[in-house]
Image 1 (cartoon, rainbow, N blue to C red):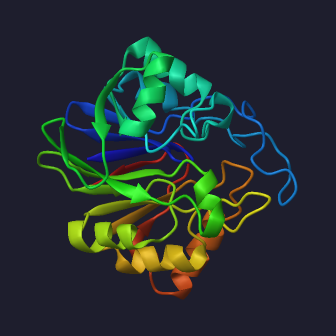
Image 2 (cartoon, rainbow, N blue to C red):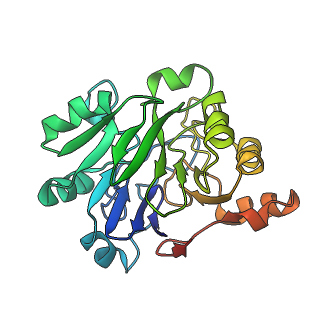
Length: 263
């Protein structure tokens, strides 16, 4: 298995003949408005372009997983850091088979996307000769998660490959812990940017929860969702230092955009 890290939460999992695209934010640098205007500098997103090797990787894509996208069915509130207009166009033009939550599927079908598998939490479905399970992802603590697009993480088991848990946009919850301790993924992809809006507590895991996630994970952790969005303050170097301080660095990969991890 290979994980091609493109940018933020967007990556491609390569397994034999399958290239599974995760959360396609494919637009150019600055193609999306800021997600924070007060707490952080109001820079347009994404802060960086796609890496030079992205075109060749994207040409190979056979399937797609979307952890979350729509909010209240309102296009203007779509979580464009996980599915932007360029991502939609790419999926529509290739007619790529998509797996996503059933509640998101109803909206995404209206955009002409090829939804093949509609997921419900904790109900395994067949996928690519293996199996996939949707894990609840709570997009923030306190009141803010009620106004976010609470989505899913995915536990993916493909034939003759390590198992993978993609956390999705979540804080640390009992469901996340259950996924780590009961499903025991060989690889856990952790959304590590600690995204925070102007009026809320973090909507992704803060540092103390990131460390707890790594400590609880039974296998290797891959940290993503870093240094690409203006509301994600955690940097690769900060995360690396905290992991080092807690004797956890050896268990974590922190890829740069364009890196390929082989397992």
